[in-house]
Length: 150
Image (cartoon, rainbow, N blue to C red; front, side, top):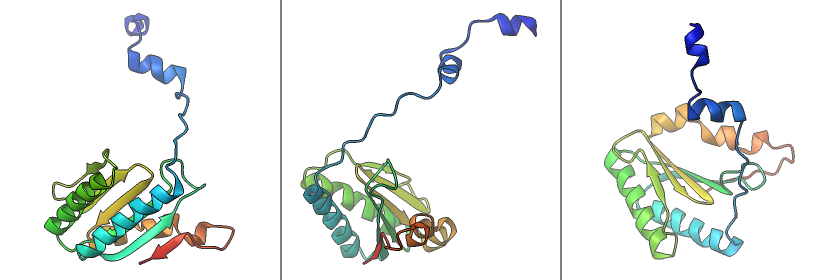
């Protein structure tokens, strides 16, 4: 046991001892560009028959994005198609770096479009995770709701 304590630390252990890295401040896109991307996303989801599309304003509440879009699809194929269409349409308006997680047939697909994060759920998963409640108006002290249902 004493020998194990004398071995040189791994890079992972060194990083853990050093603590978290400095956070890099995220650069937001201009408001008109954000609204353009949001319009493309909500229109694409509506065209693909997404249900219960909700836009949540995260400005000043989260460091990872300014808007969150939550929508429901009824089948794996529909959700995968919605994600693929979003990626293509956002690329057409100039957003080239769109990351998609879970598009291979899961109950929840996450699309990271920079300042906008899109969650596509099957109905059961959406009820289980309840992102609207987690990020919704009832958590705000101001009383103004950041949640917009389309």
